Length: 498
Image (cartoon, rainbow, N blue to C red; front, side, top):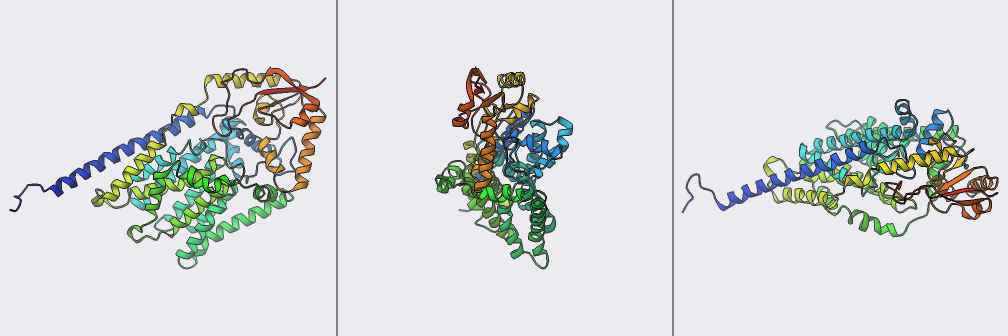
């Protein structure tokens, strides 16, 4: 018996149910993605004006900008007064105009990262939308990356270099993925990304090779050639101007860092599968097909670059959660690609349900509360009290873990402990010996009227000429802890022995 006109078959009912369930999943996805994007900007704007470090290395970035503003070189021989971080300098230059608006402090530097995060989200959206023509998929990819905010170190708005270099990398990738690729401009952006953080070289190398293999004519050379020209010429000029110190800090010191064997496999098992298993599944799904005949060589090259950089950084000593950001960014990109697979006529397919449900489960797994990332009024009061305490001392005060506190108290700043550590394990024994001598000499001479530390610091030497004060740096045991990164805070005050 044939069904009458207008009657529905079980297959029709099943298809309509699939369409409605997919519509519901996509609505939930939109809401979840909006939550994470909103949560990020709520956190970033809430703590933008916080004048103290949210993370223990933030304050050292201010000293780098201050040296450039004062006309001094960043790359100099290390000493107790100043030792540079092991990064390229473009981020510090970009921060200078913002110091004119907000003064020389952490809010000015965070402004650069905040704007870079907006650019990063925008280029991620454009990258996915240009490939899928699916606005929801593009928005969900942004939400996916915003959702990794905490597992990525709560880093995007900090006064650190990472957000700006990732923004430049993604802008270059977007130029390469356009219908008419702009290889030369992409190469320029890749070169600028290197000048923000040299890890960019590990990411762009396979991408430039992919363009050489996939493009036609002379255009296949443009991306790699322009990137190489920027890297080689800038390195030569900086190295000449700094008498070799640029090369030491940017290349020599980082490669001497010890390996962390636990992360060789822990990166894949704990950092990736432990945090973003559904995004990893979507990534494999997205890399397994060729949509509309588009070659996937660029995607695979980006996978090698972003994951290779994250893994290589993680397995070296000092690699914090922020080094995972390139991998999380690539997974967010591929999640959007997987979600947007197929056109409107095929979105009720099992593949579309798989992608939508995986995205939703991943966003649920990454849930976090924004309030835990925002300093409280108690933190602000404790910081202000400590700054007043530092200002009350006559002469210089050494704050090796948070040099911005001495600067806020109107006193000369000093080198930051992480920068010291990078040099002391940097592979050049003579450079390390001179830095060690600089620190020991300053302690022996009682050059500081007070030293405020977060933990034992050069204890055998500091105990010879200084004694621990009965006064605590922060009396409130629950106040002024770093909100991300290494969870420390100023604790002990040392004063010269009489």
